[in-house]
Image (cartoon, rainbow, N blue to C red; front, side):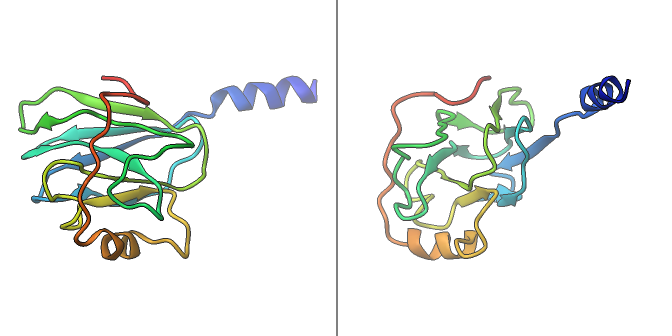
Length: 145
C-alpha cells in the first residue's frame, strides 16, 4: 500500500515551464540565468529584434556546441505579435550555455545559461565572448515550435 501511495504522489509532480524573453531590452535574454530540473520546459519568446538561441560550450563562446544537449531555435524576428515559441525539454541538470548568433550579438554580451556552474557564470561567459565572431548553427534542432 505504501508503494502505491508513493507512486501516486510521484504522478502529481509537475514539470515547470520557464519563460525566457529574447530581445526584450535589446541584446538580451531575460532572465539570462535560470535553474531548471529534468522534464522542465524552457520556452523562448522572441519579443523584439532579430535573434536566435544556440547552445555553446562554456569554453567556446559564440560557437555552436558539438556535444551534449544542444539546441538551435533558428533566427526569428521578434514582436509582441510573434506567436512562435521555441520549446526545449530539459533532459539533464548539467549546465547549458547559449548565445545569439545574429551579427555581433554574442560578442556584445547576448549570452545566457540554464543551470550555470558556480565557477562558470553568465558574467564570465559575457567577458569571454567579447570580440568573438559568432558561429552559425545548421538549422533548427533540439527543440520544437
